[in-house]
Length: 436
Ligand SMILES: *[C@@H]1O[C@H](CO)[C@@H](O)[C@H](O)[C@H]1NC(C)=O
Ligand SMILES: *[C@@H]1O[C@H](CO)[C@@H](O)[C@H](O)[C@H]1NC(C)=O
Ligand SMILES: *[C@@H]1O[C@H](CO)[C@@H](O)[C@H](O)[C@H]1NC(C)=O
Ligand SMILES: *[C@@H]1O[C@H](CO)[C@@H](O)[C@H](O)[C@H]1NC(C)=O
Ligand SMILES: *[C@@H]1O[C@H](CO)[C@@H](O)[C@H](O)[C@H]1NC(C)=O
Image (cartoon, rainbow, N blue to C red; front, side, top):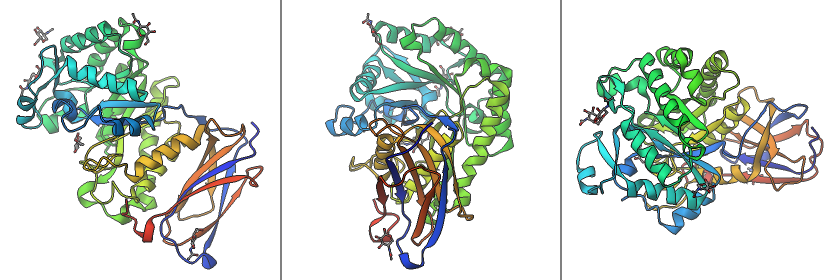
């Protein structure tokens, strides 16, 4: 592959300091052979099923501003799911919203045909495709009762909706701890097989191409890694299109600015991807691991951090690391809501990570290349892909960050021509990393 010409460098800056004394860092891009390839849907977004529960009262699907911001990220998967997914019951009956909301969380609630219609109207309008997380706690004698899912699928067929795909439950390995429901991994595999056989009888536009599972929490504890492995080993490998896990670096309650620029924290993701990739390689033939729900900090994100400039370090590094490790998609928690939303939940204004996602989608293209940074402290981190469509053929997109609190001088090697570059340099005003 010939790589030359325009280079777009997207560079996140920590704190600006004296250039004269700056550290020299060599970043070598190996363009001799790609490591892999991402699709246009590599970056997706989530929305909580909580919005379904509230009948979209707090997220206006009809807002032109929201639709414009959403369309800016198209094409994109929208995964509607999360904790509340396991309490949604589809019904033809119109829902009394207040009746839904007043009950405490988490408790069964209904999704009406109208609510389902409005999600589809929104995704069609903004050019997104839907992945819907079905209620896995809808069980009879411990076995997943597919009757409600079948009603939803039948209705979707009647309306000729287009689905990207499906998921069954949210973090099912945690049901005992969270809800006192005992579900074995053997049973979960059987439930997924049941769903897969129902979907196989549906038309292609309803079946979609995606079935994700087992949707575990971060692959840190060995019991979770084991659950992930067992799910694939016992038959999940044949039914899911993309084995997935959820990833967060930390708890919002204890998160600090320093955590967000700590290379050890960022490198933690590599270990988890390795666990996921090891199992995926062992039990599937060429399927790709997905990060099916992910953000900086769990429990809604950290206020003033997950919605600030500093969050971009985690987000950009995650995208780079995931692509480099053959991950098929990274689904960002969340498009809207809480502190980790791409859009501020009070003002509806885009947060820094919205713009980062937007720029990423405009600049970063399919083939992924190996990069090596001479910075042994892993604070100058770079990734390289072919540039997105629209740039001259052979263009590269090199993106990365400086986690030092001073300027660095960057020298790019391995690329054939750096005489034509577009540089997008991002920094926080007044060195305020919590700036929006
Ligand atoms: C650090 O680099 C930026 C971008 O080139 C520049 O604007 C700024 O003046 C530099 N800071 C110092 C102190 O040299
Ligand atoms: C929620 O619905 C499921 C499936 O019908 C049922 O097993 C469960 O008992 C219900 N939970 C509550 C709290 O009503
Ligand atoms: C599934 O749930 C429905 C509604 O609660 C019930 O009528 C039906 O008997 C259940 N199906 C099975 C196989 O248990
Ligand atoms: C259903 O939707 C597909 C596109 O997803 C379209 O090609 C097809 O014509 C539609 N069928 C009907 C009956 O409207
Ligand atoms: C989404 O759900 C998660 C739990 O699944 C919760 O921590 C978070 O606050 C919710 N966010 C929004 C925007 O509702």
